[in-house]
Image (cartoon, rainbow, N blue to C red):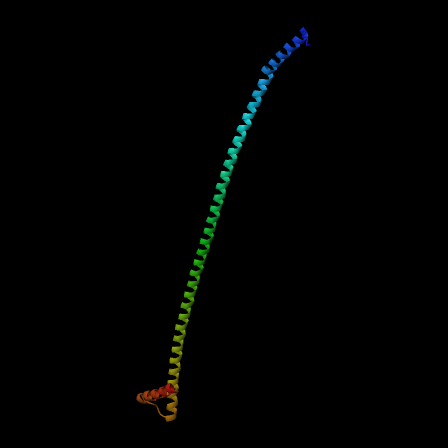
Length: 160
C-alpha cells in the first residue's frame, strides 16, 4: 500500500510549515489588505452617493430658484409694462388737455377777433352811412338825426 518514508514525511511537514507560514505571513495580510480596500470602496461609494444626493438636492433648489426668478422677472416686466402704459396714458391725457386748452383759447381768440371785426365793420358802416346821408341830404346831420339814421340802418341790416 502506501509506504511512507522519511522523505515523504519531511515533504509533508515542510508543506505544512509552508502553508502555516504563508497563512501567517502572506495570506492574513493580503486578506486584511483586501478587507481594508473593500471598506474603503464601500466608504467611497457611500460618500459618492451622499454627494450625489446632495447635488440632486442642490440641483432641485437651483431649479426652484430659477423658476422663482423667472416668475419674478415676468412680474417685473409686467409691472414695468403697466407703468409705461400708465405714463404713456398720462402723457396722452396731458397732451389732450393741452390740445383742448389750445383749441378753447383759439376759439376764444377767434370769437374776440370776430367781435372786434364786427364792431369795426359796424363802426365803419355807421361812418359811411353818416357820410352818405350827409351827401344825400346835403347838410350836416345833427346828433339826434344821426342817431335815428343809425338805428334805422341797423334795424334794416338786422332784418336782411
